[in-house]
Length: 291
Figure (cartoon, rainbow, N blue to C red):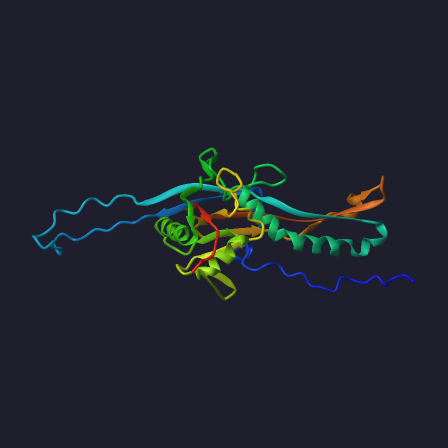
């Protein structure tokens, strides 16, 4: 007796706290972003001054205040798009469900693939995703910075020390709510040390930064090297933003492989990601309290 063919009864749910859940998604104003974008990144440090007529030092009036100097770093930055896709091969008999299956396959993998590309800078096996996290070399397009260098703030430190130093550097660089990018393997360590809490569906550090726990984040260092067992790299950025296209499907007339009489159905989506000001890195030792 033939077994009944059924539709898979489960519903796929993406892992929480992923990259796309944490980035801002402004209106792209059309589709031209898919050719790449540029913007002026303005990262102020600020300064203080005083009115010499109203100020005293305890030993008399202070001297004339120094001239006010420029303290906003301006840099032309750029970002390039990349594509995540899923391909589904089927018999022409199954054409009615092919597009649905391809779209479902894309939904299951696109978060992981976007996170992997954003961490490593690689798409299709080539270093073409800019900007990304794990970078030890600046990449320029003329005078436009496509890729800043990730600045390590500490190596081989416990999570408490490393996160504290990372967030201090982030506060000095950005002074607003930034993102802490970690592989999911770091979550038990963060939780054991009570360094994060869930707030409105997001993970937030005690300092107020958002934690991106990427299933596609491999934990590699700025030079791309894999970390030693029991350790990983984490990164910090200013606020991140992104655009993504609608899902595109291959046309049936273009999908038929006549040699095998199969349809090669594609579902794909274009992404572009960027972040403000800072790119910082820390190498941490995983582990939970022993006392």
